[in-house]
Image (cartoon, rainbow, N blue to C red; front, side):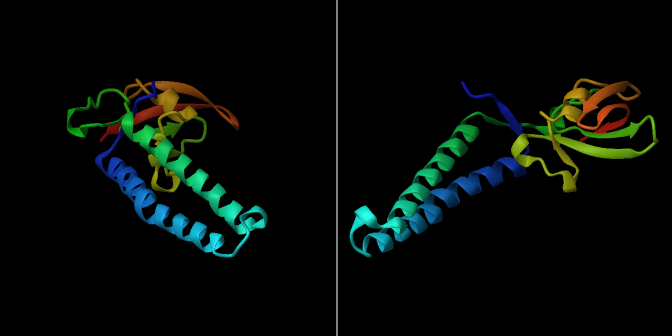
Length: 157
């Protein structure tokens, strides 16, 4: 069974829109490319036809993967989440204890992660270290650069 992933309403909507695009416009474009390549003659020596068929296989694989993600996706009702501990969809303000730098991150599903927008995957090392923690708690998190000690300053939605 696929692992359950939790999404915001916007994140789930984006996945559904992408799947719809792949099933309609994406498939139509690939079918057109295959037809054009087929019209060019002998299929046994037609590199364009082979490339189009390979693209079709990759496209169908992407559709199947996205359908699997959506089948195990769950919508989180943000209004019912507890703000006393860090959970998926929490917006967490943390402070690097060593240098005093503060940063805020929202913990989201892997497909919604966008570091520039301050959204990190719940499966990332920082998010894993923060999950279940409360305001005032200090945690040591191992990141690629080594171990960093953080303090949880604030939890919101």
